[in-house]
Image (tube, rainbow, N blue to C red; front, side, top):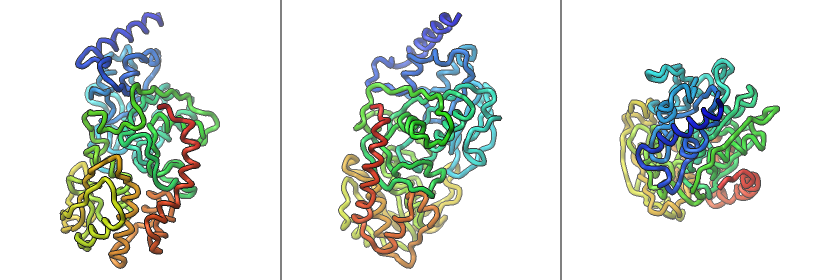
Length: 417
């Protein structure tokens, strides 16, 4: 009987993949592609919970959930869905708590892992013996999807539930490792483990590290399987993939935004607008007290590479599903627009440090840190204290290089590509 089910799964998966472009014609296959094409037998006789959102797709853009539902509940028994920050369809702004829902006409319960409960509870898992995690990360420590994966791994180990990670590309590439490593005492949902700001890893590699180094602090390791991609290499960014960018969250609408985000997200920890409440979040920076021309002049003196800075002005407003309470709401702000000229040369964390240094230098009485939040984003209080002391960006950037050497020794043990 088991053999016949396996054959049926293979036939059905082949049928699904025959629609549209054949995956055999694709140069790079995501973990979703490999799973649907070769690994559906792992779902036999399992009650499956899916951790997914709008980015959970095959490499041709087909929804993973729709693909599995087409196979039929007798073949794939999906018992639960788990949503992360921004919801299962990515329609909620940051910070918005999401209550329990049902998935369309299929009536599959959706449990939110953002808000009051960030870790799957025993009640959520009572009808699950296998969790599949497939969500597009963007490669920054404070992007909360990897924190949710951390808690999924932790809960699975504690409740004897298997986990499969369907690996996806790191859109900003898998070579770049930047920024200070998270220090003990600064852990939070935007800093779940001892990672630098840019970790240069895929979600599958991170899952192996979280488990292998026991960052999740469980008595036993989770039963973890990572379905690797085929054809992806560490130097490949999303731009080289030549695939449509599905916004990973409401305020990461483009690949360029994702590439700049690890540096300019630090602006969230200040009283300067990071561009929420506009159509260009994280690449538009400003405040009512900024004099644009002097800001650009000082920034250019810091030796920027791979980026063009141009003047802009904007008025942040509420935008449904994107921004509920933007800084300087309905106030005219002056600042800069960031455009990448060479993403291989641009270093987003270095840029973020230089930007904050210059803002503090130019406007010492108006620029303010949101101290606790900035320190959680940075993973340390040293960056803020050094900027307040007037330490130059090169000193600050050099300060974390030894930490990166130590991190890379650990990281190298878990690299799959």
